[in-house]
Image (cartoon, rainbow, N blue to C red; front, side):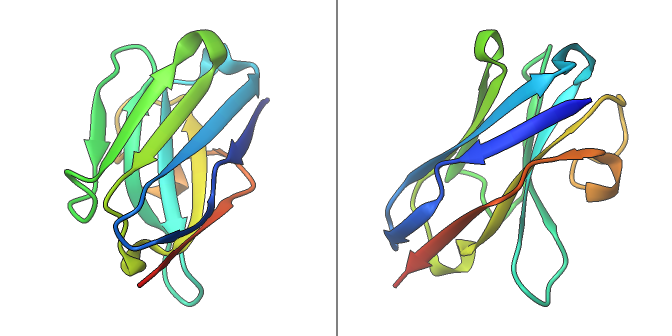
Length: 125
């Protein structure tokens, strides 16, 4: 099993920055990629970014390109989501998720069997 613990959420003004952390434990050797998702009440969960653990290849949703950066520290089994130039539209519960399967859609939450508890990000205007 893989356990994920998120931290770093909070409330910021528009234009500000936050860095989210996702610490993985358990059988982390099985993890091929980590994805970041966000969700607001009444809307579907949205894929934000992902990173492949071995290659370091990253993907981003169009809505966050140029503003968000995903990175990892494999020695610490931790993945980060640096969020800059935050907008009120970024307000959501942010989740990190892990999967072992290669391929597929990085933005599809159905392909990620392991999830963190979520951390709230609130951006005020």
